[in-house]
Length: 317
Image (cartoon, rainbow, N blue to C red; front, side, top):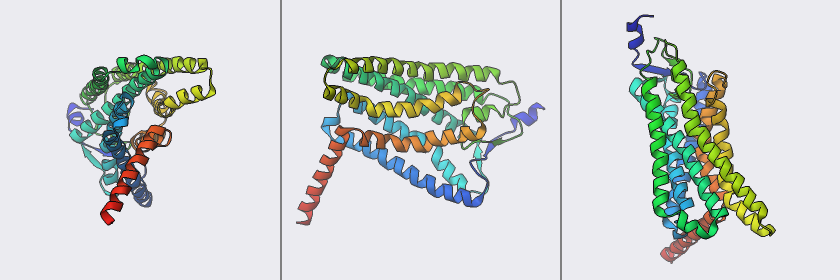
């Protein structure tokens, strides 16, 4: 194929989840409701943490970052999906596609590093509680959060640059819900083995390395919990980590399945469903998991609702 045909691509067509009109309308309503729940839940978590001084701790500082990542990640993908559900021509310009790939890949990487940072925080809280405040001081927490955001962004910038330098064929159809890395790479007219090696390397650095750190942290945490003599003490220690552990299990599993073996990975349909899970379901679930399984958050909600109820009663009196 000639160079002219390779360099004229200025926009792509996203095939999405379905070509059936009725299905698309139904998905629009479902995903719009889910997206609004995601925004509401995560904004409320951020607001609650800011308003309640009892939640001004390292754990909730990192949870604030996680909520901001979830809001941004969902926003990088879902609004464009909603527009395409109702649009006749599901076109996305090249620059918008590159921006979407960068944003979603960066935010995904940031989330994995943040989960590893949060695992370290839980390790210190359970295994070295007397020195927790001294170790997890504000300066360290800020540096760890900045490291998460910078590492995810640098990794994404590298992949975005090398992906959009590939000569693209005249086939402009991306068989995915968004400009996802593997889906865009598949459109290239040249051998992409170097890109797949880069994907594998970054998977090890930004996925497997944080995963191993999380695993190591929880091995130490479980070992410490098992040495606690009282049943109540073991229950409280485990409860400290339950919310984070739930999110870790959900978050790491599918991504390892998707990216660690680009050649023999899941089918295109599976990739789409996995992307839906991370862009729509997971950002909605995170605030629910941390609210329903965390006594401090539930207590803060009750305190805030009590204050609002009292204020309403005074205003109506």
